[in-house]
Length: 222
Image (cartoon, rainbow, N blue to C red; front, side, top):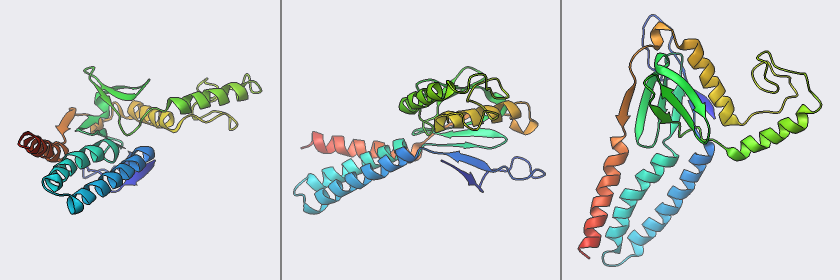
């Protein structure tokens, strides 16, 4: 779920290039590919075998649906290096220097909160309540025979220093732990300072809006 990215920006030419760790959702990508295949098959069939206004409606629908599906399934990603956290959500890209990260919170969704109190959801790192319940059951079952064994952080079965036979945590929770460690370690670093930037994903919104406008016109004039 995490891979190195050799194309990370270099904030300072005197420092080694900061390599990104990339986090994405395999389930989201798989679901997106299946949906796009289904939409493409139905749309192509309507374009080829449709009559009258049907091919035009199918084309407008494809222009609307394909960017939206790709945005919510294939696009989300989280990039982290020693200087900043970059969150690529369906419709926005948020760049947060570690000095501006106040906390990373996990509840029903995973979120990063900046020093002004603004929250940004991490779409690429979804919470799995099922995985959490499974890990909790494993901890309860395994903890009965390991009472008194704690990690170097005082958390039984959690943290880097946990016993080797401790139950594993859900992968997304482990990712959030890694991001918290990085945020804490780099919060005061000179290269990790700056302002939070937010950019709208016009490359997604533009085609989708165009498809919606064409679809509405076709339906209104039909």
